[in-house]
Image (cartoon, rainbow, N blue to C red; front, side):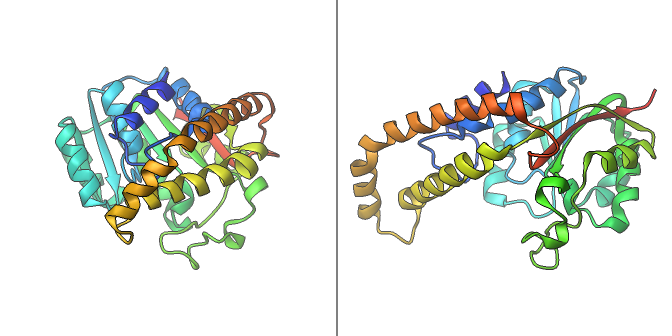
Length: 282
């Protein structure tokens, strides 16, 4: 299972997540189970991770599934990516936008079997959406798969009312979609939705996420922040060590409840993320 591979890479400090190195995000299990399901349908030659961020998904895929991979990121963190590329010679980083890199794909006749659009689609300006989808179709192999996750407008509301609206936040959101809008949009360009699901239901986002993110980010700040003297960080690590195990156990148990609820109750009316597997119409 992909989740187990994620935990293994996390525990070995190979993945850059921004969270405490002392406990992984146990509630990622359901999210990774959906990605695992999509991967079972895809050929395993080459993947393309658009908006790859710190490379978490790229590292997972190149380590466990694909012969080669391409990561696209507009503003890659060089310190993180230099390490990743040194460790994974079969992974290529392309800094820039898809439309800027498209001539390279066409010139070199590059086709990809699996395209990841993880929390990326909402960042694309509406004027560029049509061109973006056409570009996806040009580079996706005939049996290839697109895996897309994006904010669900029914739960998250419109992008304009979000704190992440692009006029409020650099590189922010331009539009939130519902399932019907996404089905119609991709269908217009010769794609079909193979299956869909929903992720991040009420318990996960209102209880687990709020507790986990605050505690995990505070822990890593106290462990690694250069603003604190080294001796203070060492004292904190030693003093806090006895309480880490109970915290890990608490989040592990809570994550099991989250996983069960995500499987049983998630729907378009109560989950903040839409998950799609998309392929070309045959």
